[in-house]
Image 1 (cartoon, rainbow, N blue to C red):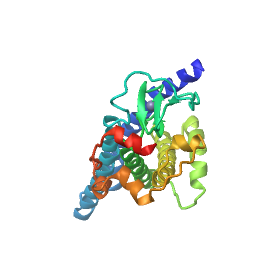
Image 2 (image 1 turned 90 degrees about the vertical axis):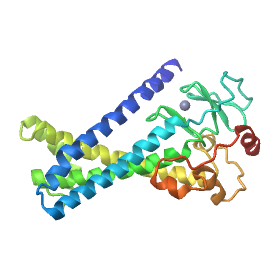
Image 3 (image 1 turned 90 degrees about the horizontal axis):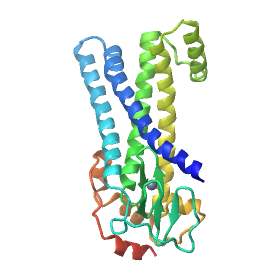
Image 4 (image 1 turned 180 degrees about the horizontal axis):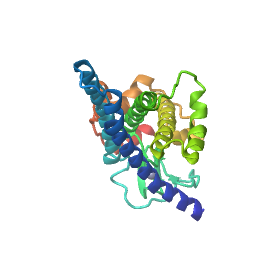
Length: 277
Ligand SMILES: [Zn+2]
């Protein structure tokens, strides 16, 4: 039990570091390698396309990081419960949380009472509940977009710079083992191996985020949380999916799709807690 908790705490510190390292690497690769190499000539039409790519990349990055910050800035914790409360009789002592009442959980990693807890996100080091769910979903969407966009530019860069053909769909399967072998044989540089590794990281994160985001949106539409699903506690939610989505995404949801801003009015937790029960 103690070692499991220690592992979780370690993960809670390593995952944000990994996130920041990947973000920094993506930034550097974009501005130092991809944009100057793929659009090298100061031709008018090409210059405008490099400006377009920079704008798209910065827009996606701004939204991904903006929503990341908002997820941390508006945590899902309950403000009026700071002390560790007594568990409800229904509490199943899970590794990372205690179940309390009215959808409240005590997160052992955050050391806080979390209102309508969904799960603990290790990349943000925060719990995801109904207050920051929207930012979390937008963060997933934009991270997925940044990764896929970087993947396309990375493939373009490898094609232009190292004449690697990606026409054969099997290229992606053999690229990493071949690159690793060539690296140790001294045929290719460390940079090229790093680029190939980044392609796989972008593909991996992109797919995981997209899948996770779809699942999360479905859960929100059904008015359920990841916690409830894991506990096999299917709530008889009578409110329609539109109301459930509006509850999380707010009335000004269109604005929230393009900018990391607050779109949900902060209402009192107590009334909402009663409504939930
Ligand atoms: Zn937590």
